[in-house]
Amino acid sequence: MSKTFLFIILFVLSKTTFAMDFDLTHFNERFEVRTNEANERIIVSKTILDKVSIETYVRNLASFLMEAELSAPFALPTCQGVAYEKPDPKAMESFERAFDWLKKTNVGKLLTEEKFLKFLNELSKLSDEYTKDPDYVIMANLDNPTYFYKKQFGKFLSGQLKKLIKNQLELASYVKILTFIADDYTRHILNKKTYHQNMLAFYLESVPAEQLGLTELDKNRALSSIADSRLSFGIKGMSESRKIKKDFDSYGYKKWEKSSMDAEKRWNKHANLFDSRLEKQTSGFSLVSHGQSPIVVNTGVKKDKSNDRPSYVFDKECPEFVYDMRKNYEFIRIALGMSPIPYSSRLFTIFKSRYQSQAMSEGSYSAYLEAIGQAEVKEFILKQSMNPLL
Image 1 (cartoon, rainbow, N blue to C red):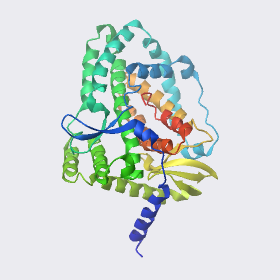
Image 2 (cartoon, rainbow, N blue to C red):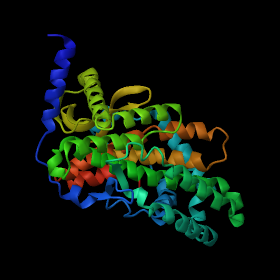
Image 3 (cartoon, rainbow, N blue to C red):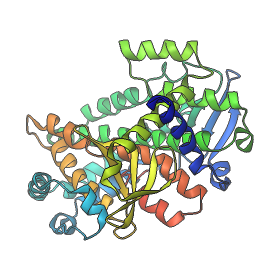
Image 4 (cartoon, helix red, strand yellow):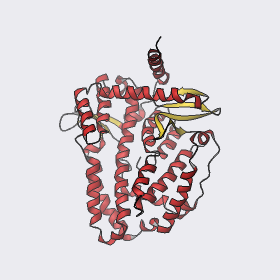
């Protein structure tokens, strides 16, 4: 028997290890099939508009910039999750420098000034026009293979917010900070949509179509539509858009199947890092034994660009460790994003890439947790997304 054939057999068998009866209460509360004005069937999120306000975003940002937060020491807990993650000492030094810069600039004070609150009200009115747009709640289009590729929601909203900033003469000295807030708020809005789409994708990948009120064709098209929504503009995006249009009925399923096989390959490559795999929970997430303790890892997304190991997700012994680590990266990202340092954009990109792809992919894991009734763990996963709008 060839190695390739054996791997395919093992891959097919491994997919059955997480097949089970799921509680679809949350799926039915969140998602619904509707028909839009163009008579196209769409899947919408009924809950995505909850908490989508710039007030929620700024309150969270202000909490990061409170003096007590900036002065709080960060102590590593002792658990196997930490032993696997092994935080970078240089990054820890960067945390301290970021805290010092934020203390000196006192950005937190700006967020309570009357002129800023007035600007915030204007920003809120403008953003509401777009988050309440019918297109924002659409997770997938079952009839239009290029529906999302033709949309530029995020780019348009960001441009409108920046136009508003240019007119704020009273806040001219804070342009860099205000631009960061506008960009970051837009990013959180778009990331919330991605997170909800990843939750939907979990159900599409793991639950029989009829239980979701769909046909197999609907499921496959929904996965293709989600893939369409992730395309970037340019030659590569245009090429993929054409492929989706040509093979709308199976493109998304094939893409998911490839990502599932890639996740399994990553597990096989790095399985020796763990004692054993206790349970394959979804195609990309596994409960494993590390140092004789159970931790959750994400085999679908590597640790970072230079490290192909499965990314670390959760350990019940230190449930807030991932949040605490990502919070420190957020401090650095906020400090670099707001500071006038010329090279900050490069560092900003580096630190932003440290966890954001992992956090977004955890949307599918949070859906898995709600489907098996693990509400408490799900709250930890939502929190460590670092998106206050979720």
